[in-house]
Image 1 (cartoon, rainbow, N blue to C red):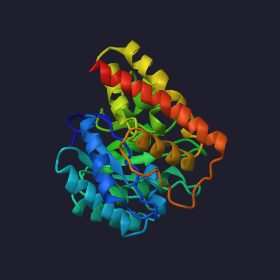
Image 2 (cartoon, helix red, strand yellow):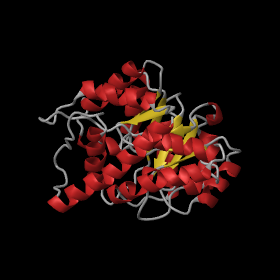
Image 3 (tube, one colour):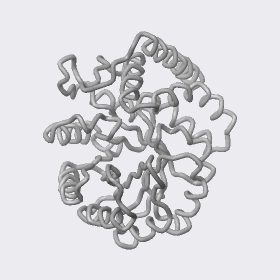
Image 4 (cartoon, rainbow, N blue to C red):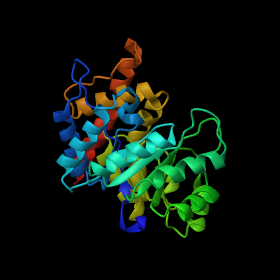
Length: 307
């Protein structure tokens, strides 16, 4: 399957809505899926790190995917995150998510401990081959280099349904070019890290980005501006978004607070509940999040008025 005929644009990570008792709020989840559809996004991803997947039970994760698939009803593709440090268990999760009706399977390379590229490749081949759906491989490795062109080619040769690679690092324009060349453009590179490097990397040939949901309509417009030769409009919009992105990505638990509070401010979520254990915010952080989110609300209002 060639990704050029598939996903291109913004794939938001859907946060897990919790009620005030920290139980799943599946009604709110359906509304978040609707927002991704209305924003023109080609796909939505869950439950990922930005969905607090690591705080979810083994029963809750498939419940989220099943709810998202049923409510999406073909209006948007659902990317089902299937993370586990064991390739055996990750493969089992991937197969289960395929049976639940997901459109794409996503896995994160295990970076909890130091593993060489051969070990990472063996892990990825086993999981990708476990399903027939297109697979997105995520590599976030703050302790060292992420995978590149040679890894991508070898994995594509061994498992042709490897179609997407999500990388989360700055200064990777050359790496994007090398991956595209090594795989004959059959592996689409997507940018993570909150979409922070989108302006830099669209000219290098990335196929899109995977930021949070709360600004996915703005990100989709940003991507369209960049791909339609309107960089000035993209830069203007991005100036309102970037401070919130930079601040929130200092800490994953801080990201959850910023993301959910922005969704509440936009009328898209009832409660900004982050499941414990979580980060406690002091009054200065609380006020600053509200300030940054107001800047995003201004950009959203301006964007809506221009449509």
